[in-house]
Image 1 (cartoon, rainbow, N blue to C red):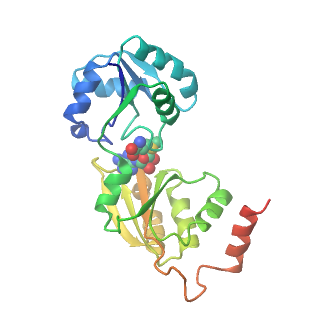
Image 2: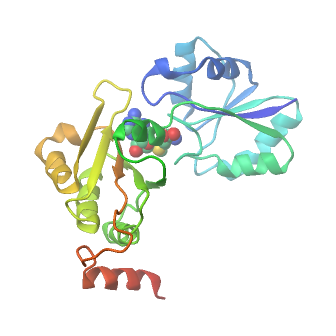
Length: 250
Ligand code: SAM
């Protein structure tokens, strides 16, 4: 039986590859990889050889028939991304949908994902969380987007790159207030792993004070709103109301 395996790979520490991931990557007829060079490096570390096909944001739709064909020819296929779990802020959702609709089995080989790794060490409530992935890149859009999350009571989780982490924290302090508790998780499982918990205002200062703090890959988590109905209007300025309305109205 042909199967499409969705295989999680390490976030940075190669020791985090699972035995099942290793076995499946060694056994499938074809590996669809976000960046074939990155995956080739992982497989050569594991002492494995494979046939590759690139599958990224820009060619995913075109790759679907190629992968369906491989499955029909009796080959199992593994999908991997550069790091962590495919489909989590990574390509693959169109492929999984199409393969399922065509009647093939899609099976997970679970493992690392930055969102779960970060939450597990954050010390923030994890019973309910809202995964927001990457915020809009442009400042104005990002600020409007954050305003719409001000009343959310679940823990908010964002992915961020080194280029925008400082601006992003500033905009969060502006939207949620400088006193809202947040956690920055940087370079998880890597040499410079760092997890910092502080009010947003302090995190803005922390990121500004040392350029090393802005290096690497980040997960930013913000504690949810505590007052379902705030008893004062802090954080709900006229500017906020106007921004939210401007975004919602045609
Ligand atoms: N699919 C991946 C996963 O399961 O986490 C996420 C891919 S997304 C394109 C890359 C983003 O994930 C980075 O910009 C960062 O926000 C986060 N990330 C990945 N590795 C990380 C790490 N080692 N430490 C902190 N964040 C990481």
